[in-house]
Image (cartoon, rainbow, N blue to C red; front, top):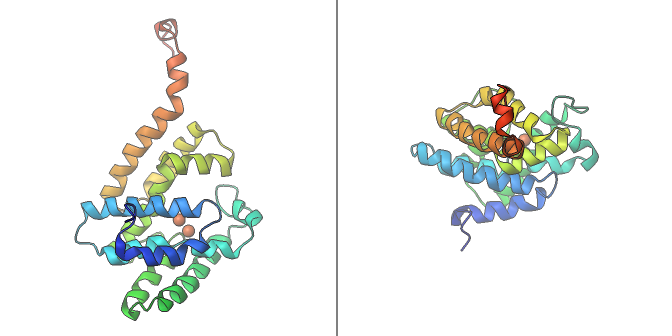
Length: 212
Ligand SMILES: [Fe+2]
Ligand SMILES: [Fe+2]
């Protein structure tokens, strides 16, 4: 028995997985999936059977583009910003085809792909299910794996990555639960980024009144 995934999501994960072995999307997806479960525990009235499949499938479209383009598709100095929308369109196409192959009811497929479509480019959520999916996706960036990936892709030290998340990504979170979780992850990210420097400071440094 897999302890990470719900039993009913395993076949969707197995369908998504071959599309996710680029840009650490497999790990990103699984971490976002568990963050989605955490958000659903705060919001038990939101439909998990829409949120969790949407998380598993949302980024499957990235695989349609070359590795070289992927690293230049996101971030403040993106060379191919159009891929942000293009990967959503491909994700919708692949998600629909995989869910149809699995025999899922059209009612569910329609609701899941509506969330996948626009998960990055549509700032507002269409539903509470969409809001939790969007927050689970973004919250991954605040995790140790997310901070390490972003620092690598943007060539920024973790201290700068954490500061960027706080300034630019926190305001984009939609739910109160998402914002609270982000604060906890930011606390961990900032402490981890600064712990070595701080342990290296002597009492003399503090006595001089320096800001740490
Ligand atoms: Fe995405
Ligand atoms: Fe994502």
